[in-house]
Image (cartoon, rainbow, N blue to C red; front, side, top):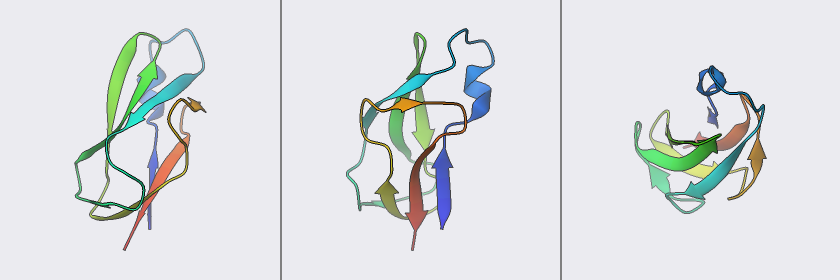
Length: 79
């Protein structure tokens, strides 16, 4: 199983310590491919795509509009 986390580097030039999950691009339980965009997160005024680390079935941990911190777990990808 692999984890999908928010890269702490996305906060490199941010003033605020929090972001938000804007939306999921795939439904919970879907099969995803490595490198596919699965979610959009907003950190200050910037919108970032989050990608799947590997092929597998995604289990979403944080719902849309959830507040996130650097390194937050968003989802897992399993077999």
